[in-house]
Image 1: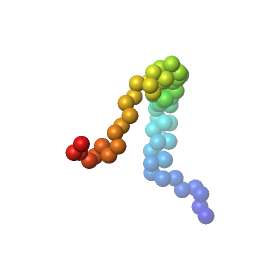
Image 2: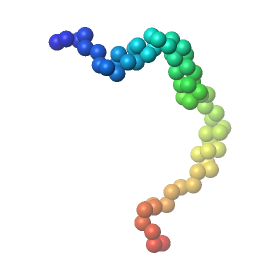
Image 3: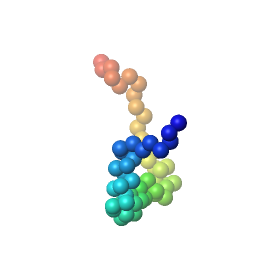
Image 4: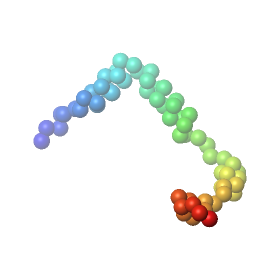
Length: 63
């Protein structure tokens, strides 16, 4: 089996990152901004307590 195949998408991404090395840092910064956050336990608790339970069968009217 030939494992040297590289898809067009993989080639594109590899070449893009080679031409623009700063993209890796921008990518990491964006990930940190959206995903790598410290959780605030008190805020999570307040959010959970303030949620309103959904009524059953929300797609059927007539009550």
